[in-house]
Image (cartoon, rainbow, N blue to C red; front, side, top):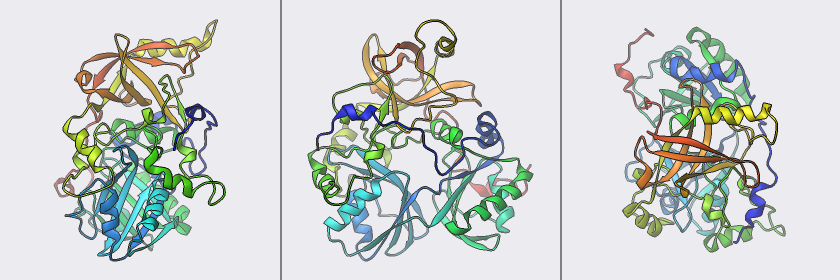
Amino acid sequence: MKYDVKKLRQGLEITRSWEKMEYTGWQDENLSWKEDCYIGDWSQMVEFRVKGPQALKFFSDYAVNSFEKFAIGRAKHVIFCNIDGKVIGEGILMRFGEDDFEFQSGGPVWSWLDFNLKKGCYDASYRKLDNKFKYQVSGPKSIYLMEKITGASLRGIKFMHFAPARIFGVDVDLLRQGMAGEIGFEIQGPKELGKEIYDEIYAAGREFNIRRIGARTAMVNHMEACFPTVVHDYLPALTGEGENDYWNAYNPNMLGASPFDHFLKVRGSFDADDIAAWYRNPVELGWGARIDLNHEFYGRDALEKEAANPKRKIVTLEWNLDDVADVCASLFGNGEPYDFMELPRTQWYCNYADKVTENGKVIGIATNRCFSYYFRKMISHCSIDIAYSAVGTEVTVTWGAPGSRQKEIRATVASSPYKKDNRCVDLKTLPEKMP
C-alpha cells in the first residue's frame, strides 16, 4: 500500500477519553515515582487472548522474541515487525497456561495479529477483549503499599512475572514491571469493579504519599526510563507491498477503516516524502537484545542484516535551556512566535518528530520531547546515527513545523535511559518495613 504522506499532518487532535489531564499538578506528579509512588490507569490497553495447541507457534511465527524459556506465570515484552524489519507494534504477552496467552497493547497491532491468525489457519481460538482494569502502582514505596493492600509478602515475585492476589475482596493478577524505571506492579482485575478498586488503592496509599498520575505527566516516565512508544516515537510500520493483504481486508466495502488509520499522524520539523521515514526498527529503539535469530519469524531476514550492521541507536538529548527559553519568550514579543512548546510535553496524539543535524546534515530524529521537573531538564528520545551517539556529542534540533518560523536548538547527547533503572531490584533485599 502506498500512503499519501500529506495526510500525516491532517486531522490532529488532543484526546484523552479515559483519564484526567492532572490531579495535583504535573510538577508534583512528576516527583511521585522518584520519591514515593503513584497510581496510573492503563485500562485502555487491549487484551488479545489466544488459546489452543498452536497459540505459542503463532506468536513465535510473528514476534522477534525467543519463546524457549517462557514458563506459565511469566510475561514478556514482545515486538512485531513488518517484512522490512520495522516495528508494527509491541506489548506484553502473559502466559496463563500451557496453551493460554494474552497479549496486551495500547496500539492497534492486535488487528494485524487478528488478520494473520485467521490467514494462517492456526489451531487456536482468540478473542479481543476489554474487560480488565489495569492500574500501575510504581515508585520506591510501591512494595510497601502493595503488601499492605494484599496482606501478603510479595517479595517472591520476580521482574516480568505475575501472580494471583486478592485485594479488597477481589481476585486480581499482579504483574511486576515498572514503566517508570522503578519498582512497580500492574494490578489487573474485572473492569466493572475498576473505580471502586482504584479509590480503595488511592485511599490506602495516602500513608505513602501516593499521587494519581494524569495524562499530562504519564508519558514523562516513558521518556526518562526509555520506553519508546507507538505514535509518540514511531509510526506503526504497516504500509508497503508486504501488508497489502491486511489493508485490503479493511477496505470500505468490507470492514471499514483499519484501526491503524487513527495512529498515522505527525508534527514537528522532520519531513519526508515516504511514510517509512517515520518507521523504526527494534535495534534503533534499544530492543536489539530481544531479537532471537535462532527461529524463523516475519521480518527475520531484514533484522538479521540490521543487527549485524546497526545504523542508528536510541539516546537521550538534553536541550539547551537558553534556546528553549527563547522559544517560550517568543509568544510575548512582536512578530511571528515559534511553535508553542507545551509543558511538560506536547499533548497532540501524534508522532512529534524533529530533525537533528550536525553541520547541516540530518543525523537523527528527536521524539517525545518533555520537561522533567525532577531533573529540571528538557529532554527527548533521539534515534541517531551511531557515529554521533557518544555521550557529550553536541548536535542541533530544529524546532518548528515546515513552513513556520523555526529555531535551531543546541542539544547534547546523554545516556538512555536517562534515569537510573531500578525495575529489577531484588525485593528480598529491601527492608521489611518502610524506612
